[in-house]
Length: 163
Ligand SMILES: [Zn+2]
Image (cartoon, rainbow, N blue to C red):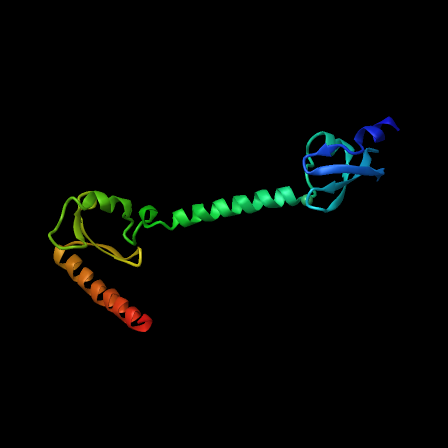
């Protein structure tokens, strides 16, 4: 019976032991009714309590999971960063920064030394809507022009809708 007195009123993480409440049929461990700081009442195996395996009614775990999820969301967001993407030709977007040094004289068109191809790109609302490589500079320039027409025209339309 001394075990019971020992446990009563003790705090284990968020749990405060209220009273003894039965016995675990598997290992004959005493079960304890505990109040979680969130207000929930749970019955927990004494050895799991003392071992620190149980520290809340489950709300602590839920909070941690939510936190992890939020962090993951940030991570996923990062994955969508154009810098981490490859275009349809398998060229790392981040390598474009490198190739920007090899200017073609045309905005959005540059020569990629690594692949020996001409890159055409266009950013629209923070992401690449055009990211393609071509054999010739003329093709790349043309692709950029077409994309400008398509997306910059779109932007104008957006503005008209808003204004
Ligand atoms: Zn709780």
